[in-house]
Length: 162
Length: 132
Image (tube, rainbow over all chains, first blue to last red; front, side):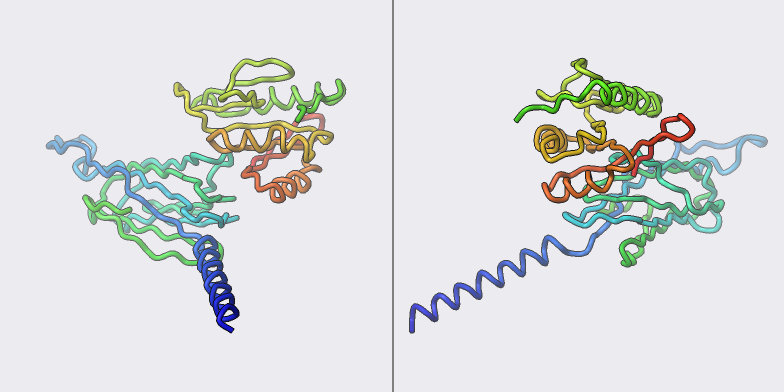
């Protein structure tokens, strides 16, 4: 009887190990947003007639990566919103791992909604923005993919997110 | 494992697709290198993929594109080229005839080859290419 008990126990341990491994490798896709750089232009006093609000103009670069080991996201929608007062002067989305352009679904003065297609594990998209009137010094990003709504992340000046 | 030798009829198409795909890539962002036909212009390790794309002014491989014709979407080609190319670094694209997309996908799935896909077809005598 003892050896039977031992065999059964070993079998259960192996089965449990297999289940844990499957849960680990098949966990839901997670997408992280990492702040890469958030540096304001050097401040200086603007003269009358010069471009206003230059002190508050910023470059912002966001890195969006699919950190899942196995789950490709056929379509991933990504919203970046800098708040009502901000103006996006220039925006660029560059995929580091796809030759298919990132689609811009919706543009407002202060926000962009993108669609990243066939977002495979390990894929990275870089979003670059030139902004003015970013009075709140923050932006919110929100993503939707594979039926999962990802948590809202606030990026604040000087805060590093990983 | 031998590398597949194309008949002359499809070799011409293969090289036309390489030239066209390379021409249409954004040269302001990328340097594009080609190995059409039996040319060996650029190597990645010891391999010679059809198209190698690096960021402009850099030597890091960002994309590898391998062009196939209908007759070369096969298990043997997958073993001989797709698998090693997909492990060279950078994103690996298989550029196949539109009609061969499902076959290429299923071979990659079966052999656990990490690949992205692109297809080509002719429309009004113009070669069309789509990246997925």
